[in-house]
Amino acid sequence: MVWEDEKSGRERLTGYIVLNDDYVDRVLGGAEDERKRLHKWRKTYELTQVSKEAKSSLPGFNIAGWNSSYTRSPIPAEEMKEWVDTTVGEIAALRPTQILEIGCGTGLLLLRIAPGCERYVAVDFAPTVLKKLKNQMEALGGAWEAVTLLERSADNFDGLVENSFDTVIINSVVQHFPNLAYLTRVLERAVHVVKPGGRVFVGDLRNLELLKPLAVSVELYQAPPSMSLAVLRERVRHRIRFEEQLVISPAFFLALRQQFPKISRVEIRPKRGRFDNEMTRFRYDAILHLGPEPDRVVKTAWQDWADQRLTLESTAGRLREQGTDILAIERIPNGRIEGDLEALEGLANSEASGSVGDFKESLEKREHRGVSPQTLYALGEELGYHVDMSWAASRPDGSYDVVFCRGADNNSVRPVIAWPQPPVFCENLARYANSPGRAVLQENLMEQLLNYSREKLPESMVPAAFIAVDALPLTANGALNLNALPPPQVLPDQ
Image (cartoon, rainbow, N blue to C red; front, side, top):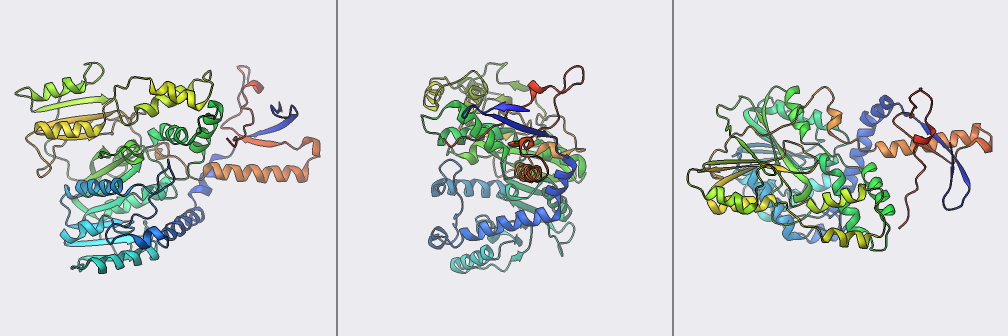
């Protein structure tokens, strides 16, 4: 296909190919690719522990390497402290005594949870990080006889006996796993070693349903006011396409229940927190409860936020009513990401043009109606209700469901709730995650094909570029539809 270059006015020959997905999947899911990606992450993580931040960190609070996607600078210590405290609180509510932690890192959880446990086995694949953790334990003093540190990969469960733990923790490490098959393998083995009545806590997961609004949010924050919306759109597309971390839909864990019958129920909770950052906006915890099935499930009539025209004030009024022991509300618009969703919608309008500065100004004029989950947690606490929230519905707008239950508190057994959930299918789990490295592999294949063309074809027949497409577009008559082929794109510098 010949396209005219907008900058030079010259014609460019562009080739289109359909990649063999089975080949790409074999490469990305192969042992060699897994080894390379894990090795790269280990080296990156170990380098954070020789930084000035790591050397100057206080024992028990080594947060070196925790950087913001927005500013690329370290996340403020007070925000990280809240993240640690809320995560520890969520795990402590499960009342664990025998824990296996996969990817213990610098011990942000271990150093707070292990002292109250009978047994704590912590695994990490980075020897430098484990050495730092041992030094922290020595500096803090106290008895650590219940703790065993093991240097090994996340999928290595050698010597760990079936039904020998009541809790497995996999917190804020899944995003660094090489692919979904690796995560599934780790979870299968985690389920195997947890006794019935226990649970697997998978924390700080990036939400696939919100990958696009996150990309818009970050790129819009970093964009100078003079940047055009066309350039911003291309940067957002590039960020999504070249995402190198594993991003998981909450629906994956619901589908996993069909594959592993030992899982009796699944909870999906948006992250708690007062601070507005990427962790509270776009991440969640998944808790896999292992058999038997719960005896009592709270079933209640769900109130739809939009249909009932609910507001924060009307919700508070209902909770204050005498006799209201349980209030269940679904599809609450998420105030944390409302602006990001509006920005995504605005950019999706191909007719929208102008500068980033003007675009931001127009967004600031919009009236926001969403409610932050933390606001409802605070409301429930004020009025004497235990509050449970869920992202199990896996909606792309990030809306959430909530149940207020009077008479329960964090020290009592949490109510078991039948949350709204989408239909899920375990036959093709790949639909519930991205594929880290796919875009890079495609680029490498394009480059190899281009070099091969230069060697084998006359110069006039060598394409300026190759573009991978899912399928060649066809007309109703089955002929190649040239007009439907995507034009070549170049990521602008600014």
